[in-house]
Image (cartoon, rainbow, N blue to C red; front, side, top):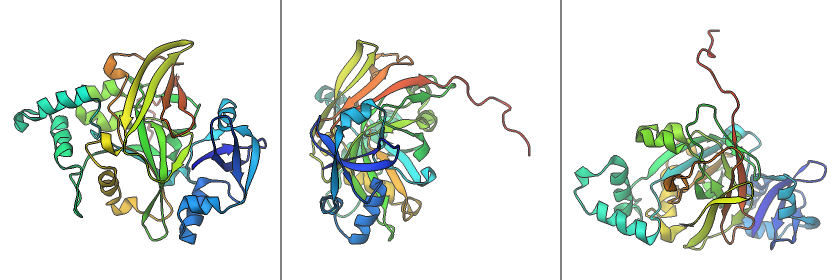
Length: 334
């Protein structure tokens, strides 16, 4: 089952179940958000999919693709107060293609003291990121992206700040969570994500990673409920007008990661501040596929397209540049 949040013809927020491509969505009566659905399912102590299946629905006459074309689809999970949505991610989590894996293993087999800090952390993940017992595995790289205000809707522009050196796509799997009244995280499901980062800033020095991640991102358009296949294979592409500038397959899912999803979730939610009842979390699980790594230089107006079979419509967002930014001296004494 997949859900979307959208605006109806009267600009009221609705939540709906989607079906196959081209088929009309079915709006869920009595609920206007996936957040409200999640809270009600928690209160009923019922799995979200079962809870939704028991609700009355009204068939519309518009498909998800038509709603996307009209700019009426919202991110699939939002909090009424954007400040209570934490957007974060983990890096150095994916093994990449077979060729990349082989090259990585050759590098990792040498003297650990000769490895960069990033390669050393990747090696720790390969060796200890998939615990089989009750103890947690090694912790991953972790970063903060922002709160709910940075999440662009499907189809909306990803605005690169005026001070940015780059604004490139990162096709990723995103976990969507609500913290229950008892402080226990509840995963609603997963969605496609474009983590969107400043790769030139990050490449200057890995300690600039935190700066490079403070950028907009996009999630959606559809929220897939329930468990995932271990092996997920999608496509990431960039279009410039009618021209296809770059396209590459990407892999994700548990089978293609050096950290298990369970290990990544544990290390995110082990912090008490990340388990505040009622909060929403959007967590990006990383990627091994970037157009930046292939030397692509994106331009304002370029469209990022990320597609993953089983997740419904692709996630499409154009790149925009912030015309003016915050200036030196704009902080003033009160």
